[in-house]
Image 1 (cartoon, rainbow, N blue to C red):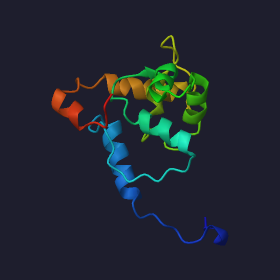
Image 2: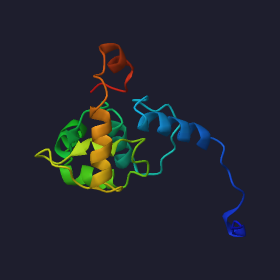
Image 3: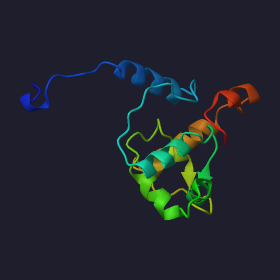
Image 4: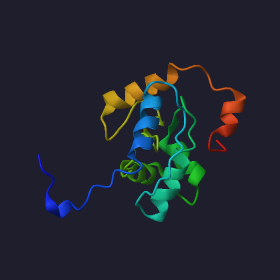
Length: 139
């Protein structure tokens, strides 16, 4: 099918790296992503998304915990609203955020995918202290 003229020229440069890193992640061979991200969002969303990228591979946290870490009277609902606008759901791993009781809650890709991503991460060997030191942190 021909590409509509109003979409402009295709610019696939860089997608090979994204595809390769996602494939490595899904194969259980990658725990963090090394990609230049330019995500559109407001300052608060960027604060939340930055914190989400610090959640270690194979671990979860709650919306409330993220709110506490952000301080400034931020509540879990505000964090949830920012997380729901995350356009890069695996690269900014919002699947690692659960409800206050540990229950799986909202995920743009659906709860079955969220569960599968968490199971993938939990099925891998534990992170060594040296690997933890390489993760964005502190956590």
